[in-house]
Image (cartoon, rainbow, N blue to C red):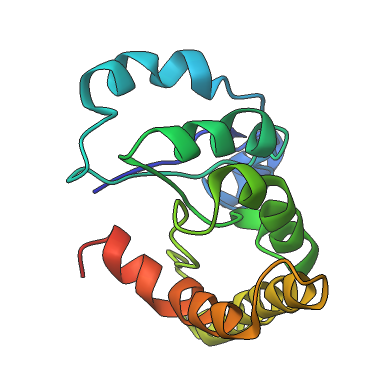
Length: 168
C-alpha cells in the first residue's frame, strides 16, 4: 500500500512558520498534474492488482479531470477521501459528485483518517458516513440505485473499502 498526498504548498506563510513551526496552517492548494507525473509509475505498476496506490489531493480541480479517470482505469489506483480542509460536509459532497460517475464507489477507499487530533476522529467519521448516506439516498430517490444497494454501499464506504485498501 502506498499513499500519495500532493497538491499542497506547505507552510506558505513564512511569518507563521517562523513563529509556530511546520504544519501550523497556511498550507495552500496547488495545481497537480497527476496524468503526467504518475505515467512512469503506472507504466510499470498500473495493472498490478495486488498493489494499492491511494491518491489524495488538495487540488479539487483534479478530481473529475484526472483522478477519477485514472482510478477508474488502473487496477492499482484508489482515491483517498476529501483531505484536509476539504474534509468537511461540502468538500465531501463535492468529492462524491466529481468522482463517483467516472471512478465509481469501489475505486475509492471510503473514509480513512490520519489526523493527529485523535479526539476528532469519531466526529469526522460520523460526518463522512452521513454525507455518504445522503449521497446514496439521493441516488435511491432518483431511482438510480435500489435501497438494498445503498445499504450495501453504505457499509462498504464506511468500513469495508478502507479495510480492503489497506490490507487490514
